[in-house]
Structure formats: structure tokens, C-alpha cells
Length: 314
Image (tube, rainbow, N blue to C red; front, side, top):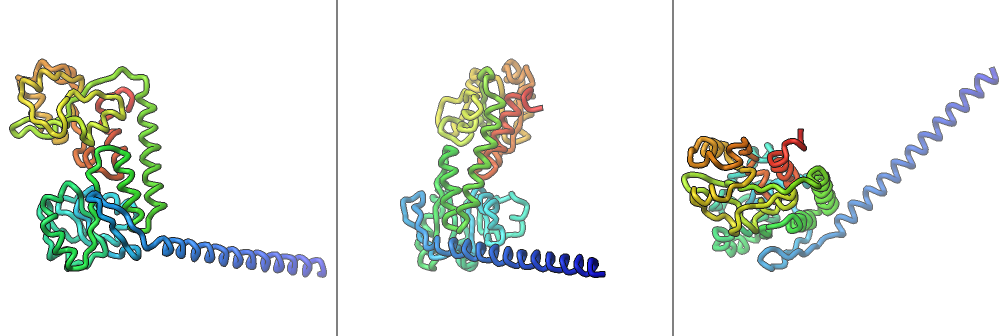
């Protein structure tokens, strides 16, 4: 009997110690959590210089955010700020949750609606400044803070954008994690294509009816460089090509960003003698994934790599 009670008391004592340790652990975790929260709060106020060279200052993490560009929206959602986003661009389609958000315009913006949403910050884009700039004074007069994101041409500029947005929203760690994840995936893709013979590509971004291409100094051009693919389009930006010049470029791969353009290339007798057409090397990639300077850029690069090097991505 003494032995029985000894076992019971020992068990109760051990349980008591475990409970105490658990309580101490809970207190320690709670303390760490409070310290982390204080650290985030201590990170504010923050000041970040935007694409227009303006110093944008926030006193605290924003609770209501409006995004005026699909790439901005994708970054915000990847920073776990979906609940804070109250307004988005009419063209936003990713992630699916954006369908539930208030639309504030596409090329032209409804300034009154933006002001009515009472955002703590609006993330605009350098590309949309031609339409937004006239309304900047109206937004600023209403007390709306606007941060203009740079029109990134390179991955490094995109990483900077992610870090800037992370700083302004109190999501510094999440932004760094996002960047590292993209870099790691890109490194994996590059490892797969390493040592392959250089291929060439012509990226068609429109054929209705003129042929428009992705040229040098574009985000698509940067994606091609990463996987050692030569862009046969020598002009910068988004040049227009004649059918004759298109045929003369004769890339090993033709990439289109709209499904209807595949037929326009493959079924046109004028293009029948192009190597890419003869070798069934005309592929479509997701236009938004390969043009938006956001968290899916590595996925966009992989989709292009799969088109150019199908044998490596089975």
C-alpha cells in the first residue's frame, strides 16, 4: 500500500512539475510574444522613399489599405494583409479573394470612392501615374497617404518593392521570407537549365492585328535572361513588328501570352516556315504571372523554362 501511494504521489508530483513547467513555458512564450509585438510597434514611425522620390512616413501599421495595381495586390496578400486590403484595381484577379474587395477603377480611378474607403495608405504604381497624378492633390487634401511603387524592370527592383511594402505595413519579416523563397525557387530553376545550349525566343504580347513583342529592358526580358534564353527582339520596351520582320527573327521558341494568339501564329501560312512553328515550339504562358512584379515571378520563370526546355521539366 505504501508503495502504491508512493507511486501515486510521485506521479502527482511529476504532473505538478509538468504543469508548472508548462505554465512557465506559456509565460515565457507570452513574454516573447509581447516583446515581438512591442518590437513591431517600435518599428514605427517608418519613412520610405517612393518611385517619385517622395519620403512617405507612417506613424503606425496601416489597418486599411487600397491597392491600385494587380502586382501590389498580390504582394499585399502574400504579406498576409488580405484583411487589411479594402480596395483594389478593377483588373485584379489573383488571389481569388480579391473578387470580394471593393473595386476602385482600372486605368482611371474613382478618387471619391478611394477617399470614402478611408485608407491609411494607398499603394499606387509608377505606370499609372499618367492618370493618377492629376488627382494626387485631391487625395493628399483628404489626408490620404499615397506610396508610388516603382515600375520594376529587374528582380532586384522587385525585391526592393516587396521590402518597402513590408516596411510600411509592419511585415518586414514576411517580406524577407517572400524574397528568399523566390530566390531559392529561381536558383532551383537555374540549376536545371545550367549547361544547356542557349535557345532563342520571341515573346508575342499581342496580335490584333499588329504584332507586339516584349523587347529589351522589360520584365519578360529579365525572365529570359535568368534561364539563358536569348531574346531575339532587339528593340526596347514593347515594339511593333511587321509579319516580315517576325519571320526574319526566326526564334527557336515562340511564346504567346494570350490563347487566341497561338492560332494566329500556328495557322498563319506566312509563318509556316519559321523554325518554332515547324518544330511545334509555340507555347502559351500566363500573361499576368509573367508580367506582374510580384510574388509569382518564380512561377512565371518556370512556366517559360518549361516551354523552352520541355525535356527538363517533365
